[in-house]
Length: 89
Image (cartoon, rainbow, N blue to C red; front, side, top):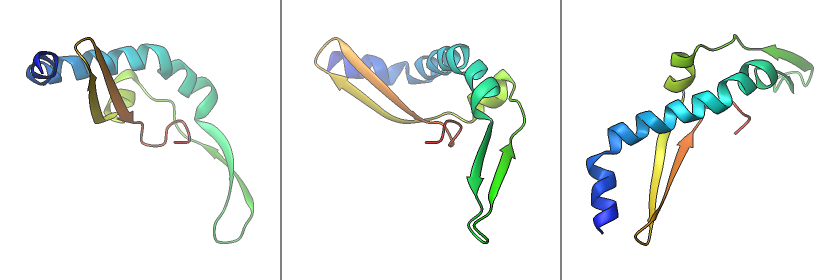
């Protein structure tokens, strides 16, 4: 419980650090590999090339939403984020 209380009291700061770490590790991958892809149009079934704009650090961070915090015992914490389908789910 002590770890859970500590996490809750610092959640805003921890969330910010986690988003910074995710941005450092994933923004380049998104901009270089994931923003352009192909998909089938639901209306006519045709294959369509999709090219989304490159994102800045702030734009990328704004797409990340904290969805879950799990505390395991007295030393392990897991944070889960929704990435607004930036990486195909």
